[in-house]
Length: 169
View 1 (cartoon, rainbow, N blue to C red):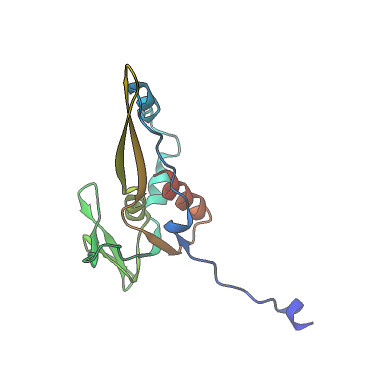
View 2: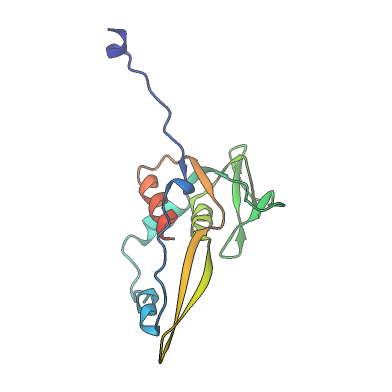
C-alpha cells in the first residue's frame, strides 16, 4: 500500500550517441546521387529565430567518451563563431576552449550541437568491371567523431533534439 502512496522515482536514463543509429549516406554512383545533399538556405530568417538562439544557450550536462584510438585525447577543442567552449563553474560561465573527456561537464547546448554534428566518413571504393564498362561505387560509413552522453538536459525538447542531431547531424 505504501508504494501506491509514495511511488519510487527513478532518475532519467542517460542518452548516449552509441544508442542511436547514425543515418548512413547512400553509395555514390553518379553525380545525380549528390543532388539531395545540396541544402538551399532560406532567404528569410525563421520567425522562431530568437527562441532558437535562447535554446542554443541553455545548459546541458554531458560526458564525452574516450576515443578508441591508442592515445586518445583527454580534451576536445570546441569553438562556436570564434568563441571557445564555455563551461559552468561555480555558477558562472567560463570560456575554456576545450571540453574534458571522460568526466561530466555542463556546457551550453550550442557546443554540444557542434560535437553531435562532428562526424567522420570512412570511404571505400568498389570498382565493378563489366564487359564494356566499369562502375565506380563509393560506399560511405558515417560515425561520431566525439561520442558522448547527455547526463542532464532540463528542456523537454532536449531528447528529440539530441536524437535528431546524433542520427542525422
